[in-house]
Length: 503
Image 1 (cartoon, one colour):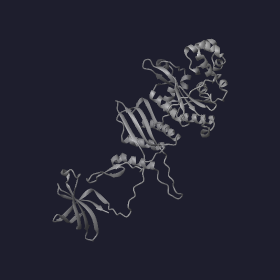
Image 2 (cartoon, rainbow, N blue to C red):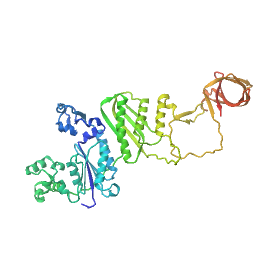
Image 3 (tube, rainbow, N blue to C red):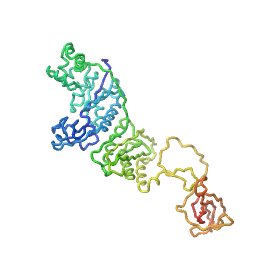
Image 4 (cartoon, one colour):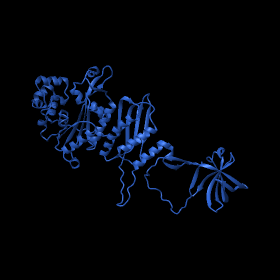
């Protein structure tokens, strides 16, 4: 064993139960049992502490559990357990990239190689306290043991109670610290357990005091390995695994959700967990997607993405509410998945006397409310389309440009068309084929200059729909007030309309 080795073992017992109750805080205060298997052969695979105090035991059938009053029964959900494993790995990955994991029948273990992290996170106990705090913030309870020996940390974490939760083993004192622990922390086979029971060996301390040669003679090399484990002396070749980072939460629902309020309550819990994990890595949420599995096999997916990344949970919840009210699911919801894309927290440097800028999140909420009333196609910024048709533009969501704008000449003067919607009818008097006089809103105007006509109404390659002729006019009324206007003649209906004025 190298003196610089240092490991922190994180042990989450009754893992199926903790994974199921992580996003169900209302059930944490009730006795809950998790059933595995297929009916009618379902059995209890995990439970919380309150269920254990009521008499629930592993291996009980559904009928036996239902005889115990006020015990909530939940089905085992492998997807939620996988997400919980990923979350524990993500939390551990915030301290070190060297992580080794093990999955037991009813528990999950994550061992961190924390050698050399003192300059970043302080002494081992301080690191373990912060690690335990972050795991608890994700809705799970764990025990953490720190030791210079990999297996000593593992055994100590398995043998501790959640009330103690944290232990730091001094180097060279592993044997004394492990001595009171039961043999169950070693994962012995039934044969080995019966053998040690017949010998009267019930703790690691008693196993470590057995003569090594006699133990090898009776159990072979496995006996030597078990004795080294009990003494905290077994060496280990650390095999780190990759630590994924995905901001995703999902839940299988026991009962279908039909009302939006129930769905928003669940999304609020998921957002809280995702935002906390993003904040631990100094990140913000750039976009959030909610995917709903519906009755009948359908799916419903919506995505919201404000202009700037943010970790304001109330803002995300309001945007999701507006989006789901505008595009509601068409059936009851059976499964909910929430995934976010990370982004960097935006920072704005203001001058000492500069006015405070408006909150971009509040603007996004107001735009969502307007879109709910007038429709999504009527809110945003106008973008020109590649067409010659009148009103050839579309509306897109406001976006903050990622690149610097292209510099333009400030001395260029441009005219804007103030369009009348709808166009108003006018009476036009021609001189030859050119407008000479017109009457608009019962006021006479004379034409001082006319430019046109331009045939409009469609794209240049589609002549069948060129049904309008546009004129640009300089006109003046009786008081010599001059205007620049745009008029249109419908070539099919033979009528004139005032389209707008140039400013």
